Length: 174
Image (cartoon, rainbow, N blue to C red; front, side):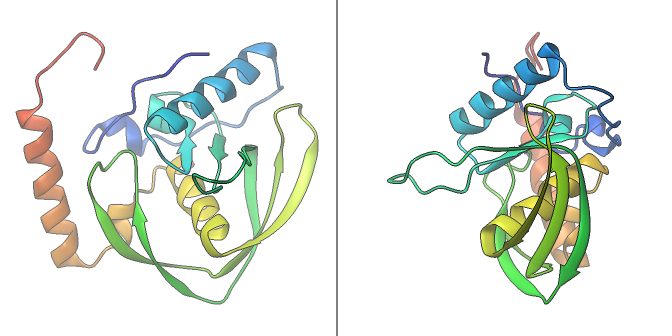
């Protein structure tokens, strides 16, 4: 397993749509393991493959608290089947370091996906898990949390992140 570099806004690769995974291969399993390690190292509760420059429809989520055992969930080719209700959540994103903003999402979702072994499953979620599923699914479609903000917040966050990117030293790995 390896910790990968997380892309930060305004990197244009974050806007690329992910492609469906044809088959769960050993390479795909290794990718999910790298994604989990990267998410934990960040630390975060979710990470989409597109956030590390991989255009596969995969994300990982673990909403367990620091004092709880890990509940890593792998979603390959996720599809949100149902949405209901509405919730406003203070969301952060590993691609927007230090940014936390109120985002409106569905309160409950039903999702279908493949797990890390390629088995199909359906899951009904609410609260943080529902928010994380929607957030990561958006990443796979090239939609970012900044797209869900009002115009003023969007401008402020965009300006902050562009300044951060300009001030960050360039390296061979970014």
